[in-house]
Image (cartoon, rainbow, N blue to C red; front, side, top):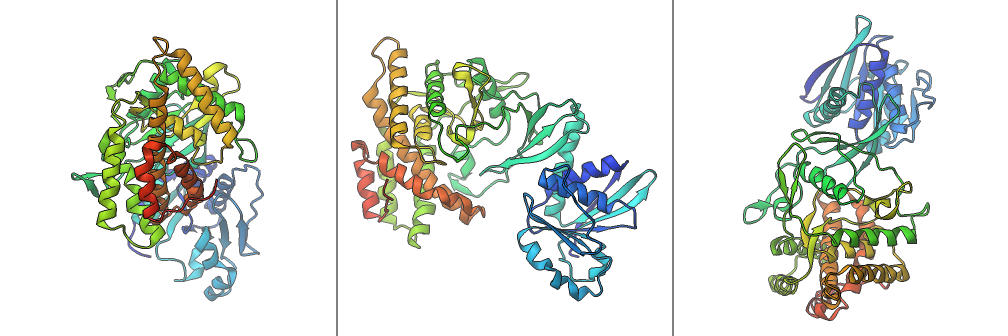
Amino acid sequence: MSEGQALTLILTDERHTQEFGEDLALALKAGDCVALSGDLGAGKSTLARALIRAMADDADLDVPSPTFTLVQLYETRIPIAHFDLYRLGDSSELDELGFDEALSSGICLVEWPEMAGKLLPYDRIILKLEHEGAGRRVKITAPAPALSRICRVLAIREFLTLHGYTGARRRFLTGDASMRAYESVATQDGETLVLMDWPKRPEGPPVLDGKPYPKVAHIAEDARPFVAISQYLRGIGLTAPEVPHVDYDQGILLIENLGQEGVLDGDGQPIEDRYRESVVALAFLHGHELRQDLPIEGGPIHHVPDFDPTAMKMEARLLLDWYLPWKRGAQPSEEERQEYLSIWDGLIGELADAEKNLLLRDFHSPNIIWQPQQSGVRRVGLIDFQDAMIGPTTYDLASIVQDARVDIPKSLADQMMIDYLALRRSLSSPPGAFDEPGFLKAWAIMAVQRNCKLAGLWVRLKERDGKPQYLQHMPRTLRHLSTALAHEALSPLRDWCARAGIEFPES
């Protein structure tokens, strides 16, 4: 195989071997070939069975040995092909078993890989198991990127053990558009927590004044903002997850599990009363006095960054840098670029007197967890707020009314605006202090800014990050952009979009 790196583990008993198999399932990705070597009884099948059941999240899944069938296929979270080549007549038969096809879209687990000769991929992950007393010794050899993934899941296991969660069962929960991933952690006493896996982001290329995009756009680079904002939200009476344990250096957080119940029904359609309650919670948040310096229990003060003109403009530029080249097959002209950026200078200037408060940044359906056991605003559970800033309150209202992930009926969107504005008028002090026309202008500008960002972001996720699934949201994003552009304050940008040939789907 190609030059790789190695590490050795001691698996003290069968339970430990099964646990390692389950953890390994969290480290693998489509295209991985795992070669399991070892004598009869060394634990290859035990490890493979645990890995497959973990990937399926089914502890009772029947996982027979493929000794006679040679290959067994599983439609799990990532498809798995389990090969046992002990009875392979000739290595050339491997192709007849569909190995290449299985590897192209999933994971191949191969017992007795020696029988395949040199036909297995060079960049395979080799696990060599040997008896070690009552347990087993496993030597893992793999290319550096794969070994790094394995070391990461082992580091998380050490973190859990350190904090008293020995033997906790881990399962993949979800990933997001960032580098973060999430696991569910079932403890020995029946509690279920969520583990946030937040490895340090590599420094990206400079995009402005020598700074990479995350620094310009104020994207959180470690877990401290999440912890500080969670404490603040809970402190004012909203629902956000507690963080009982965190390793800031490694980027590992164990957080309260708020559940899986969201604001969409089983068909993925918005539940009206839950969306309306979410707007009530947002108005409640905006009714509090602005606080920019938030303490972290046992740690430093987190200064919430401003959604400054540079960050606003940088995000709006995503339409220029990614959407237009993708749509038109060519970069915008320098004249188009300068005119677009000049328009945004003017629009951002219109926000100088806009009401500002804590801006959660992604206040929409994926990040709202319904809490039926609570009452009032506490029924709206909040997550994914680590990138929060101080900025126009209209941004978060635009995020929920124009949900990026789901179609909101116009009647519901209109009602949410009515609910929010009525609450803000009733809560304003002194009475009549709430500037509704100014708020609606700021709402249109922030809605347009957000949708210009999203239109570019969906393309960047596809082209740069290999995540084409986000393009499904593009038609909705363009419809939202068209709706917000109808405000008179947006006429210069509306005209620019027309000249640029940006077409909007019908509502």
